[in-house]
Length: 281
Ligand SMILES: CC(C)(COP(=O)(O)OP(=O)(O)OC[C@H]1O[C@@H](n2cnc3c(N)ncnc32)[C@H](O)[C@@H]1OP(=O)(O)O)[C@@H](O)C(=O)NCCC(=O)NCCS
Image (tube, rainbow, N blue to C red; front, side, top):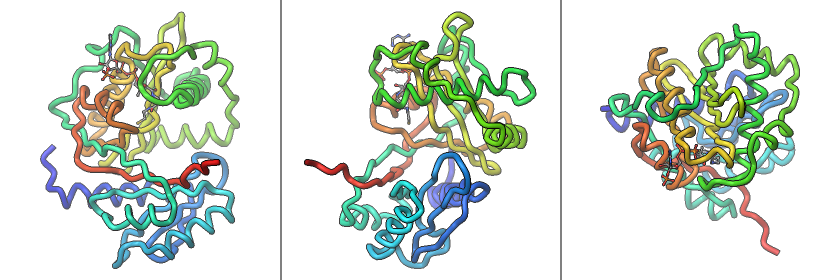
């Protein structure tokens, strides 16, 4: 993981700028670019424009937020602190609340064999398999239940809540997922047993030789058994085998970062994720 820092952060910038472009329309607002998703799916974010010559201003942030509201999109703004350090103060002065997430890069030499982390079977989803649609639905349901109980503690919600959260996917969304997996832009993994079904899930987005692991989630009732680490390791291993040499992620908190540290990710910086501050009564 011996990337020169400038090279590393440039590659991350290009990645963040490229990922939304096959599903969203970029709109420039000063030194920011807003990715407005077309159709259903994750709504994306606004972020610093790749070729901007000045840091984003308060006026740029205000303009983007107005546009996001107009389009019915969340007022989400994301950037890498080391690349755009001035934006933190600007975003806060705009009233946004900023999550400073540990930005971590995989040291391939430190990646354990996923099978050493758990006895629960791990699977990378394959569009050629007859169960692909059910697997995608299970991955989404596990993520929905997992993310609804934040943090790393165990909780009550388990397979019953997952089953209740399964939503049928429309054909267009499934075709999009199939195409992305088939050409290597998307990777998904599940951990689960035949009796309990899917217990943990995660995915990765890939552009060329750079990939981000995201959406790792374990059902609260199945936490603290090594599944989050194992799913992450399975995704990382598959990405490396496919020729990706820069695998990274943004951990939601310092506690969550420990899970990734154990599978070979090392902190290189801070990913800032801003949204409107909750209104206090
Ligand atoms: C983050 C998350 C995916 C971790 O999942 P998990 O399956 O519990 O992860 P692991 O079991 O690998 O590790 C969690 C803890 O269990 C411990 N653990 C792992 N195997 C264990 C075992 N066999 N016995 C006891 N403890 C164990 C780990 O050491 C770790 O402890 P720590 O918190 O003291 O560092 C899960 O908590 C979650 O879904 N959170 C909500 C969604 C979220 O925020 N996702 C991350 C987005 S970046």
